[in-house]
Length: 132
Image 1: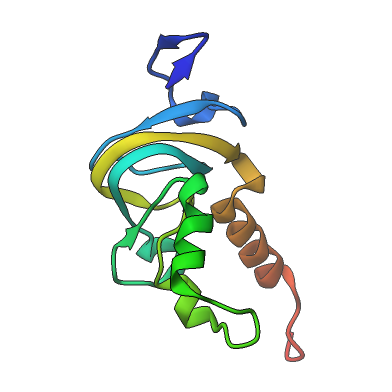
Image 2 (image 1 turned 180 degrees about the vertical axis):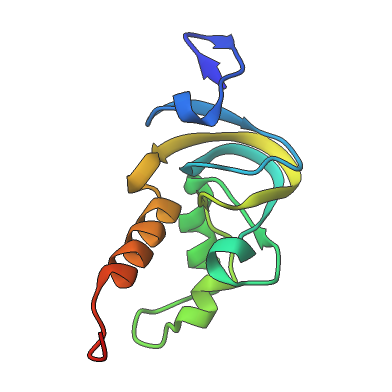
């Protein structure tokens, strides 16, 4: 991670929102973030989304250009079209399978995607069923 213009190594538990983190192949990401700079970054998000294909990541600035080139309109846009196209979002629980770059942490702990899913699972397990 980059902190105060210095490259330092920190455990995931010490990462804060706004931190700039270097992506490397094989890295298991434990916070949500937005790709700030990257070259050929793809991630495996199957543990979070069930999507078996590796997903290409592009920086946020390139998203507008990509959408314009696809000639999408909101009237005929389907989720399957969106989910199969590059995105700048890197979710917690994903693994970087190719490329390198930097991403900005936007959520940690219970606020990250993985934390919200775990919270929903805990709420569901606490609910009484009609037979209980």
